[in-house]
Image (cartoon, rainbow, N blue to C red; front, top):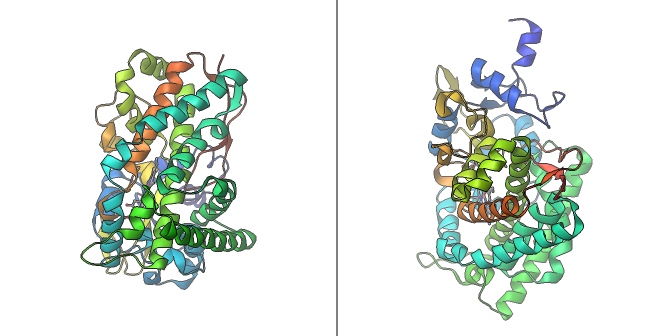
Amino acid sequence: MTDTQSAELMFNPFEPGFLADPYPQYKRLRDNDPVHESPMGFWFLSQYDDVSALLRAGLSVEDRHIADTTVRDQYHTMMTGDVGQAILNYSMLDRDPPDHTRLRSLVTKVFTRRAIAALEPEIVRQVDESLDRMADAGSVDLVDELAFPLPFAIISQMLGMPPTDHVRVRELSGTLVKSLEVADEETVKAIVAASMELTEITRGLIAWKRENPADDLLTALITAEHEGQMLNDDELVAQVVLLYVAGHETTVNLIANGTVALLRNPDQFALLRSRPDLAENAVEELLRYDSPVQQTRRITIEPHTVRDKEIPAGSFVLACLASANRDDRFFGPDAEQLRLDRPDARHQASFGAGPHHCLGAALARLEGKIAIGRLVDRFPDLAFDGDVEWNGRINLRGPARLPVRVR
Ligand code: HEM
């Protein structure tokens, strides 16, 4: 293999054009080096079956098991979110059993299907308000007007956050999720500061809720018990911050990436308008076509064999959900095309799999269906009104600005 060929066969998020369209690079890896050992010291899986099997294999998510300290330090800042501060180490996303099992059971108890379904009228109301404002303005940034405010307002309301905290919390959480990306030293400092401030705000809120219980998720979490155990204060803060951040920094990309995909595929936009019954399947297909979370990660404690390669113990492995979702071995020869009536769209990998499968999937699906369904129904002439500005993130990839006009 020549140097140019091997350079082309790397997971390289710095390749020109990657942030706007990472899919050609994923395809190269999928077709030529599906179990890719990066010269940067981690592994990258890109085929559907391998990604799915890895996530179900019950491997670790705790960074302390990464053998290579350079990689460990790098991923403390790039992927995991527990940048130097203890608190997020208590988040279920970063814990193995038995802690993971206990934390997840407690949160599952209050974050129920019923609690989510009950939100439907409120989601419809919020979406319609946004659409009314869009109709009045004629031309808007869809991220600012709909894709961000909807999931943010809904998770804030579910948790019972007082309205006054919203603006600051929004800024802080935007900084905090940069910990899922490649970050320079300045950014790492900002992430640590944001995380500390968000932790303090959440502690204050919990103290206030203890005095003023209400019919909301936070009150339920404070009092939740599983096999005689309750969340301690640090655990409580960590799960609330996780729900809060996961609750909106991801769904924003579902709505915005989904809208971009529909505007770039007018036949599919027209199909959804003529067949509103497709709305649910359309959301699955939009999740598949452009994943709101592009990767998740696992750490091997024992040597782990994938195909003909043995991944040594202590390795950091990225499972590329976005690439798995475009794998023609699984989704067929039209895997790179958007098809809202695709029969197996529901098997998309965007919410991960196995013990850490996304806890908020039902909420994200509901918000996506209502937002995208009503947007398309209300504005038949919806069109781009300028270039999409990508948010520069490798993992939580989506538009920072999406200028559209509605007539
Ligand atoms: C975990 C994706 C929305 C809460 C995850 C994981 C992914 C993901 C990929 C990790 C899975 C793994 O490693 O196997 C998404 C996407 C969303 C979304 C694409 C929107 C389109 C939400 C929402 C909430 C939420 C709305 C809550 C309000 C969580 C939690 C976990 C998680 C608590 C950790 C589960 C665990 O570690 O056991 N999500 N998510 N997510 N998500 Fe989501």
